[in-house]
View 1 (cartoon, helix red, strand yellow):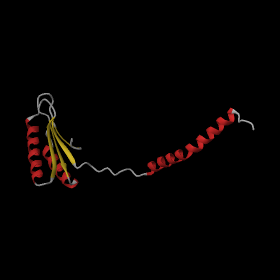
View 2 (cartoon, rainbow, N blue to C red):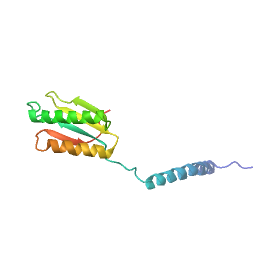
View 3 (cartoon, rainbow, N blue to C red):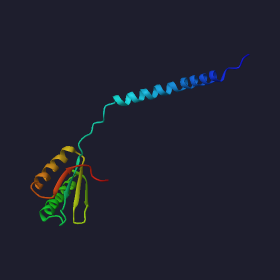
View 4 (tube, helix red, strand yellow):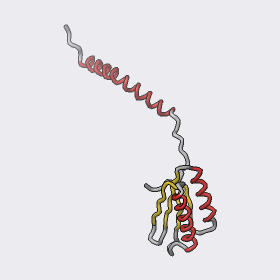
Length: 136
């Protein structure tokens, strides 16, 4: 009996390893294709928004403070009526800048409040209302 040559043994080992690895490679390739073809999750508009009262280095202007106060009262009333799920009122700057964020269970209710507060803030400098998620 003759012993196999080292090159033949190496080729045999490579072949066996390739045969063992092939099913794993095929499974991975299939998973990759499945991921490519899956539909993207539907992203809905946030049912929350923030009212910002800002400043330009001289503190929040009185008119912006008034709008923020009105917004705070309207949203707290909505919270008492069960329309506002969560209200986050945070000071974000050294000069009184504030972020008032309201979260709603219903997107239509959120839109109604957003529109009301947007109309209230029209023409008022340094008040921004932005649809975004509330902080945790």
